[in-house]
Length: 301
Image (cartoon, rainbow, N blue to C red; front, side):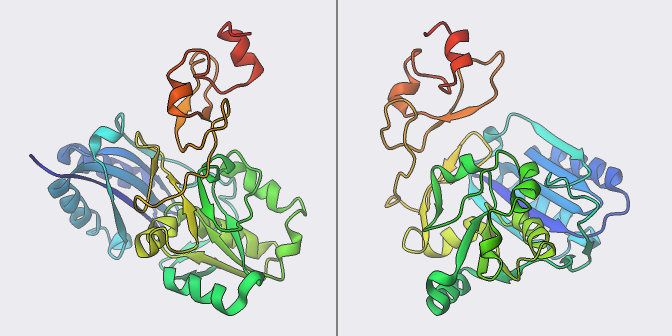
């Protein structure tokens, strides 16, 4: 029986012909039997693919043949091709949709003007040295933070990355501008952009975690500053850094501790995920997002 893995990776580097890179990447993944999602723009590449471990290793070797990707870091995670419905390789204006394609600047070294990169152990050293002055700022959608976040983190009220610009320009986080701010996200790619946007808007001391939550969790498990589960965008839905994790989330129906997200039973008009415990998810009366329109649609009033 062959072993399977999931690869997570990104690289900010100028790409003159994103369509050509897209076609090459699609053909490469198809030839290796890999599935997942890859986005390519003039700013770089952002991907998550899964498959046989030998195929993953070959994919890394072949992808690093492209000059701009030669030193790209790949993170390994449990899972495989079966965790993705298909292979999707697309060209987009941005590899993360902040709505700031014209503002973002990249060169061969990555994002220009982004936050200072911290290794996981340097994050702890910063907190040890600066104490409560350090602010952790969640660079993910608010839903993701329901099941896991850094201790005491500020979680912006955003549903998508597209909401971040208006959120940080709203003034509600201006109190952070004179604090050391550590931005964090799943694998680091969102914070590459977010930290740059924050610095451009007057946040003076901005950091980002090398490899994101994934690398920090691999280093410290549940014994560091991270709490709970990590939301992931595939069939697994969440991963943990050891059996001693906390369940931070609560079922929207019975309020039991849970990290279980489900798709709302109203598949016709609702695309929302909801935090619902396995017991409530098993009952037609509670296998939904709780919004009034979905309760009505499902005839559950």
